[in-house]
Image (cartoon, rainbow, N blue to C red):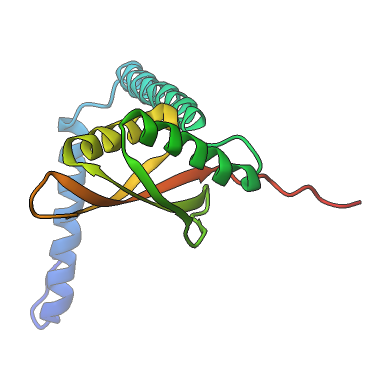
Length: 181
């Protein structure tokens, strides 16, 4: 019996040869390629699961530490009390650095999803080294104020006296609203 006859369609013959070749390749693959070892796959899966869990645990610990840091550097008082407390803190540092406090002005309040930003503009005059010392003191995390801007201009050409405008930001965690009813 002949599979290919004279006058058969060449496309049909090509498909038949392709099918026979595919079956042969499948048979060779089934016999030549070893079956996967279920236990080794299971060990590999457990190892990946363990390392992934370690990464998750480390990330969770890191998040807890960072949240604790944020809590220490944000204001935990009502918003109306932040301005006077920030002014008192800034005044104490200005006096400690022997500078003159010219002004302390609140700026436009901002909100960034997780925080309320209460910016202030502090203007002082005095010696340049004292202004640098003040900025360094304001950047201390214990002040709960972030320095966002420092502009220094010369007060007079014959001395080291300067006028400095220092942008400060107090961060406040917004209180969650309680539902009525």
